[in-house]
Amino acid sequence: MIADPKTSHISLSALFKSGDSSTKISYFLMGFNNLANKQIIKGLFFLFSEIGFFTWLFVDGINALSQLGSLGTKQAGERYDAKLGVYVSVNGDNSMLILLYGLASLLIIALFLYVYRVNLKSDRKIWEFKKSSRKIMTFKEDVAELLDDRLHLLFMAIPMIGILFFTVLPILYMVSVAFTSYDHAHLPPGHLFHWIGLANFGNIFTGAMAGTFFPVFLWTIIWAVLATVSSFILGIFLAMLINTKGVKGQKIYRTIFILTMAIPQFISFLIWANMLNNAGLINSILENIGLITKPIPFLTDGLTAKATVLIVNLWVGMPVTMLVTTGILQNLSQEQVEAAKMDGASKFQVFMNITFPQILFVMAPALIQQFIGNINNFNVIFLLTGGGPADSNFYNAGDTDLLVTWLYNLTLGTQDYNIASVVGIIIFVFSAAFSLFMYKKVNKLQGVNG
Image 1 (cartoon, rainbow, N blue to C red):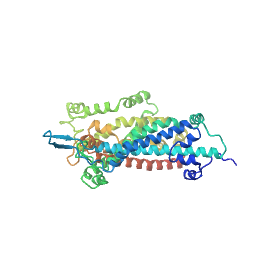
Image 2 (image 1 turned 60 degrees about the vertical axis):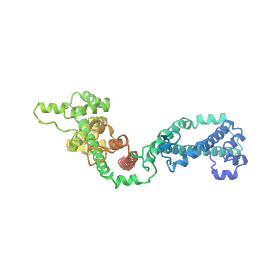
Image 3 (image 1 turned 45 degrees about the vertical axis):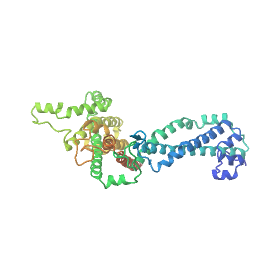
Image 4 (image 1 turned 90 degrees about the vertical axis):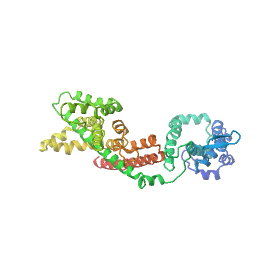
């Protein structure tokens, strides 16, 4: 029986034992088997990849990897030059660059190992064609197959390399910083920082930062829940009002609320911030008509500022729910509604038992997304209150700061990059875990209802 190359599944370790000499050599000299079987261009690609990798490894890679463990040992400073009779500056190691180059080196090694595996898979394909007495594909035939069956791999190759070095590498760098002493006291290039393990996490949960972290984390959760629920409920209420039979100008009302989405958020929030400050438009009007004798501290009192950001958030959150709910209401089965009314159900009962469950069924995934978005809602807090008012009990955080704005303050304010990295990891882990849990629950409920 002739084996089909598409269905033969010999392992790469077994291939080394079963293959011919050129196959075995290709395990050490990449592309040799391709060159031996006249796949010149593919063989040269593998060969030059190996030459380039080992050239880089011996010239720069080994040095970058060797320094990754210590993150540098030579401190920058000054030394006395006896000949000149003065102190001269001495350059030291840059821990930040050492960490970055070390992580980039690990990615380069991972990329080379992938190319090495592709080389072995190419050897296996040649072996399978030989075993089945088929003609080994030429470079032209390989290209034709790539453009036909595996065109997606060709188009994804460059973007994937870009993602590897411009997305994965920064993420690895950020995560790595959480395990170092990279803070305002250890800023390169003047100072070195080093690995300290889980000390930063201990500092966040049980150390000096716990007094800031837990209040900020609690407010972040309260904010995300209230901002999501209030926008959802009031958005539904607004949609129900606009879509009530007999209401004139429904399109005009929808257009007005859509404008809040069309205008960039930072413009809206900056205008709100100006109107709500102590000398702003709202306080001025209230004072002029005699309702208040002194300005309301919309943005300068902790509790009032929290209520203010929640209310202003409705300005951008409510219209989204209103639009989605409007689409659901317009496609709602009127037969169910009429049947319920004929059975004596009130409008409230119809809403609670027919309309609302269908709205919730459709919007459940969007609600999860909104909740996660509100946890990371930087714009509302930063542009309205800047995280303030300041709280002397917190480390570089205010009463309205969320974890994400506190992270910003830690990074650009006090330059405590290690603590900021820990906060970023906590935000990611919490958001990912919550999303996975809730999406599972939603899928189960939708499966039952479906």
